Length: 318
Image (cartoon, rainbow, N blue to C red; front, side, top):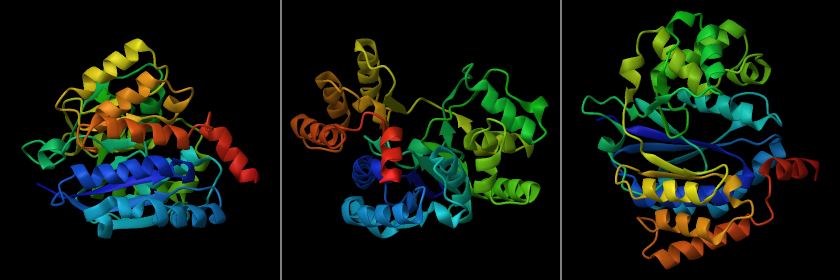
């Protein structure tokens, strides 16, 4: 089975989530599976980059434990101009790291993703060595992303009509294929990948462009295979029904990734913290009570963060 690199693109206000992610990688990932961990700091200014790098090295790096020496810290400025449109530069970085990866595949994580069960080669790959990811019915709001991506690559006739890989991380990417995609875009646009994302007029995304490119070159089935759902998440409106659904997913032994969206910490309730603790207690903490105490600590760190976008704008002005 191939080795992988792990890739996370984040900005400073996500450092508390990165602490949890780093700890989860140390406790859950097979050391023989992971070649490198590439962490990309995505800030709007060079000064903010410098500060986030310092804070990462101070608060997060040690939490990778046995993987600490495998961590490579990159900056979004290495791939192009910085911008306040961080959601666009983030997408560029997730593709641009293909030029830095030395493994056959890399797996893109969001800062909010963390492992809650052991992760080995069999967790991510099928018996032939191709990564698996659940294929889902294309949502109406996501359809334009696919249409734009296939159209950009001149392959409208290949647009999947029903199911396609979920675009939610963790997302496995075949390094050589993505590197070729970056070359294609940069040659076509006569600019770097970051400028392309900052200036494009359509709604294509990094992952839908990758999926469209694998179809264009006839390698879709060699890059991704339909698999089981392997993650649970807390995001959007968190009511009793959402809590019940998330708890059921957490109890599924196939679920190895848990995602807590930052908006889950808006007016967070005890039942939400207990759900987070239920996930964390599987592998990250010895007891439920310790997991719950850590969930409260994370909530305290984010207690005044009602909206990360607003807070980031305040940070830029200060």
